[in-house]
Length: 58
Image (cartoon, rainbow, N blue to C red; front, side):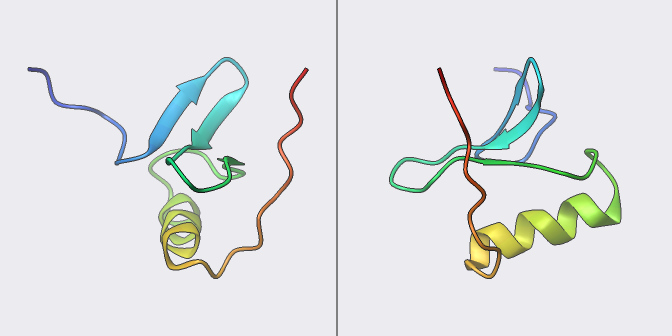
């Protein structure tokens, strides 16, 4: 098996990075991967402190 570049529940899609976990709402990351802002946003999502942003799908 190969090692993932991204942390758990974070997936790269065409238009950016998304947090996707079963039973949770999907959220798009605002900050770029690897920056301190990304890690702060990631920890806020896991702890439930960040309000969920609405992801629109067609």
